[in-house]
Image 1: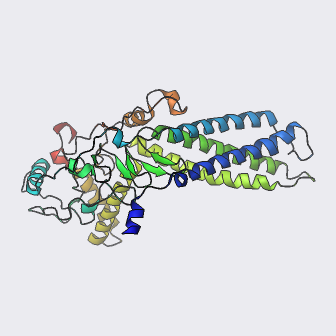
Image 2: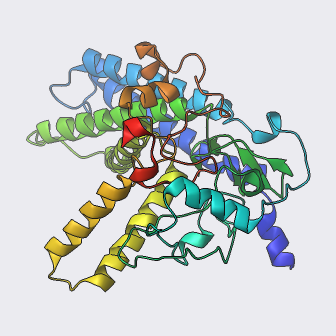
Image 3: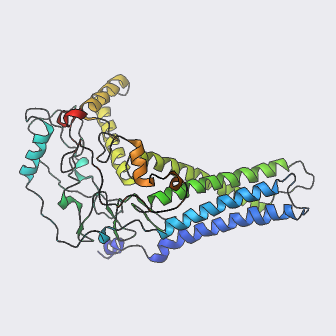
Length: 389
């Protein structure tokens, strides 16, 4: 019990901010290497300076990128993600509606009672955003939902977790009904609006109000790392024929750090750009990946490994009946990549690259996909509004 209580406690402030100091030290160190050990010796024409060094261009380009990276990093670490306790009031846990009434409503929304209704797999019954001990928001909501009257074993089986219902969105730790897309972060010890993930490199969560600044920082950090890596490698390669040339160990360390963080930031930047365009968060993307994995396992049970055409045909039939998992099956998909992007980054194109202004999202109200019912459960195509089928 004592260990469980310790796991429930948020991380100490110093533990959460340690990597912020580490990141600042890395930024200062690379500034020292490039400016102090490359540019300054060249300006003074020291014997240790690298040959054929375009000092002014290198110095100006480097300083501009460093300032932009430091500016955007400062913005993301001082901008809170937005907390649900600021917009929600304390309340007792709401009671769940009766199982039969809820199941009857969803059955009516999904089509005639005699139509095959997909059952929910055991793994899907316990999947959904809510409070948890891992900070990503998963808990069981209904371990034994009613089985439909008819069941097609070859049909798609999406989750039937009512993610918009008040009893599901209730956080027993914060004692509030959270806004949609909010999750409880164990590291911070509170519910975060439009929770994306807890990032140790910025010392807090990435959420509704600082997501754009996080992405801007990642963009500038990637450009900075590529610039440092390319310039140091290029200068050392160009000077290798000088008989007095000797590799500076500090250059090697800076090149290694730049290569490591260039790969990291490019990966993170590409992933978050794609997620924003699809209007999903990292934690929501984990749910889609889990559903794809379940479907891959089902297809492996239904067909032999060499029956690739059958697997593709079955998945195509599922998509025809339900839509694509990460689009029509995304509760927050509106069909417009531009609208999704502007909902996070804003309409002013300058604020897509400069850490200015505030986030356009309030973290409380989101446009919903009409392919879902009032409880947030995905409906088959035949139950969609007429114009969307």
